[in-house]
Length: 502
Image (cartoon, rainbow, N blue to C red; front, side):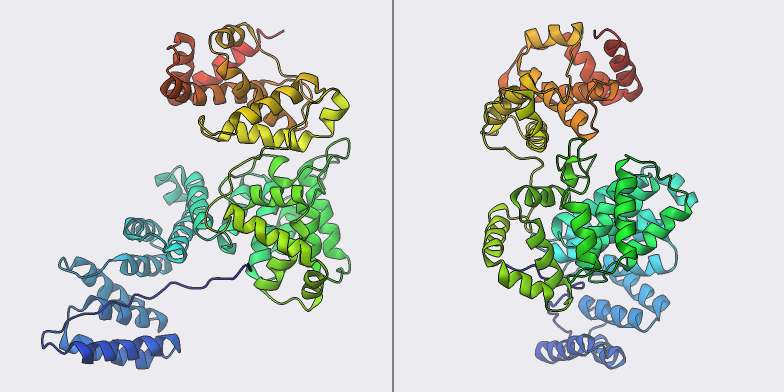
């Protein structure tokens, strides 16, 4: 299986019946017009669709195609007027999907950001199952528009950044090689000063865009101009320095992009004891993306193969990649099988994984399996309770945490009473605390790790109550009420309870 790039918005191809019954003639004209569009002969195509509209003035497909041609010819005002008229027609044989998308583009060109977003959002319910390319285009358009909102419009959509992240995630879900969607995520994370995570998304974007490292160089220069403080030991700075240094060096035989990708994603960020931490488990990551998938490839020793294959399919970087793939045919077959088995390009890979069973006896053994422990904890707190592998994951977490010296998970009097009544919640709490602490290399138990454990309890309790009919608990009901309706109250609750932990 090879990763193929997908392009463009698909044009509708639906028939119309003219007032004179000249179906075949009108269909012929429309097909000729569409053929001319594919050849980018928009003036000639416009003539064909005008002929259709002279016979059948309300033929919506022809109206859309005419508007499309006009937009390509920069006659945006006329194109917009046609689309606004077409949208008002009630009795129509086909969807308004394409009209709303194109009208959104035209509003965007005029700087009418909120109206553009409104058009794109109206198009979403009209998507048909399986129309992944069109869906990805729409979701990306909304995300891009939200990120570019003016200060005035950001006030009107106060959660613009989270909305933009969510829509970019939907674009990636429908088209996992959508380079621009990854780039938007990187931009948003950069505004939040989450440079390490942003860099990861920029590198993925570069891998699929076929533009090499141009954008990455620009981003590094921007961060440097912003005064990024280069303090030793910080993951952001380590990533920044490693990539910045690679940019100055002569590239390897596989090119700069390969060098950068390898540095960022193959374990360059290491634990204090040189234990590789794949990017998806070395900090907060975004679940609706390729990051969990890349971390899995790193664990399986297939990441280098994936990088070569993706570079070959994105754009030819010379024959070096082809030669590498020929030399490593076994790895290619293993990668292809894994991609097919996980269906990563049809749907998201679930967060986390179940490691091979291991009966931990010493802290040293546990330390060697930090990455596996993180992945297992992520799996436990992100899957449904009826998942058949939950018990297997629980055994691994229990065994690992019993001897590990890398994290110290504590409970206060409140949690001890809760767990005595509802032991089902103990592993959720432990998994969340372990995942948080390991991802940030915190050996001491912190307020944040404790809050993370409480968050997961507040999420798991209602599900357990529904699925297993466990008894209603007043303390947990209070916790869920705070979690759902009073975030400040929840944090205060966490701080008060943490202060009681010895």
